[in-house]
Image (cartoon, rainbow, N blue to C red; front, side, top):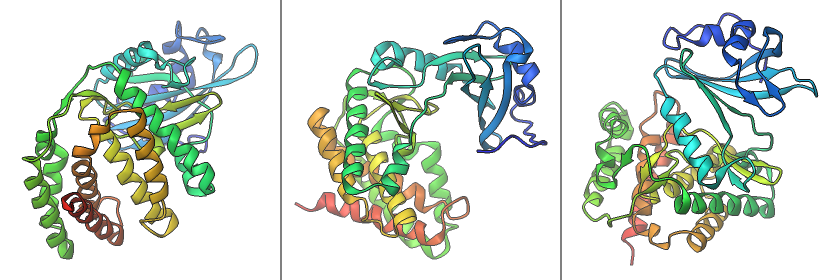
Length: 334
């Protein structure tokens, strides 16, 4: 994470230039209470660092502040479209028992600066669960898997039922899945496997079990879990809403396999972690989640397998398509 170096421009993020200017940003932060710091003068914003930039979509930044008792930092997320809904969702989740004082929590939402399209929230200090899964021993990996599973089970049980609803039978009709379908024809040698997996997913839709909609994260992976001192904190609420709980569980398991192949050289390297995660979740949450789980795992594999041009190396894409087919075949096995 380095200091921001000019120039960074993105016409879709209209508030970005003001946020990258500490003096201009300080004016917008006036009145935003942040623990021991309260925005007031231009000198209180020390620096702004770009953490991640998704061109034409969003930009995540660290905002360094000066305070009487020392400096501190916030996280700002600038969006190309109005995302006040994310701030509202985070407020509802915080009030439902996931505040900064709770063991299972989210970053404290502080403000939504509508004129800048910027969500301001607490910066949570601590290791990301994904890194421990990559570098830790079996014991530490198992402990991380349990914390991730318990957080998700609690959220599915207590999280507020609000926001966009994603029905299981509509999953293959979503914009992202339609994009996957169009890419199938452009995937060269991967087209046969991609088409086969897509067809099996379409066939599986009719046999999905009815599921009670619950609060959903929408993109739950170990990369979104921060293991702070005394807290397990989940970040990135851009895809919040309501869905079959199997969607979040399946997404987490798919991501474990992808990282295992990318970081550890074998798609099976984190199978033990996946087993601990699922066993812990089922014990603490909703055991019926298993009925639709393989569908969501395989659907995530299809998305990964049709991103050859965007981000996934060809070898990874083919491995994820193979994994999606294997997952659905395992479901059909008595």
